[in-house]
Image 1 (cartoon, rainbow over the protein chains, first blue to last red):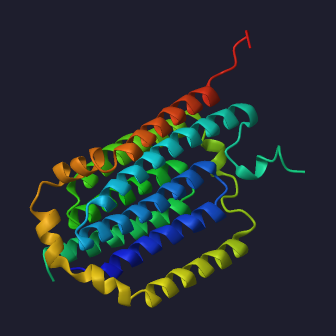
Image 2: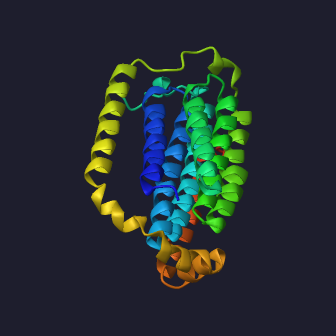
Length: 100
Length: 176
């Protein structure tokens, strides 16, 4: 049996990779993908604890996380399309309308 | 090593490597393919945790739904120009510092909380509860019984997201 620490380390690694992606990349599509990576890392932790504690609530919460991820992707991609129509760019450094 | 362990380590290595590809590759389409590899190997990890229903949901909703949506949007907006631009922003030093702080924090939490994880090591009890009963049935009963109100709230969230994304991405007509 795999020790639960290994699942937690995997989740932490995926989460950190997602954070680095959000902080360093300039392409908004890659930023949205990094957010999906972070949600997956959370799901791994939830399901690992659900299995080891013998309680199914963790899996139900993982379903809710997937729902939130789907809603976030729909709204995020709507913003990307609206933004691309107005500014013709995917580069977040050029989206500075509200900066002064 | 048992089959479960071998599968876990294979899937974990694939997941981390392709996640690194997601944030480093220059072309957005390549990033999307790497993300598909990550999501599929996370589904495999769910299988090693005996969450068969979640593994199916992961493949159908994430890879079949969300990722296809990403690829559609990438297809709608041009990628040619973005390939030749700079890919990383200028604050990468600050970003690396923040990431190192986060890693330190996570390592500290895992190290300090290691004793409390003994509770989660007892696998025998878990085998009997989650391993024998049908996983989909158990998840469904809990979702529609104990967690009915959060389920309805989640459906409202999805409705709001649908309306919001349609309102944002539709073109303004002459009448407006």
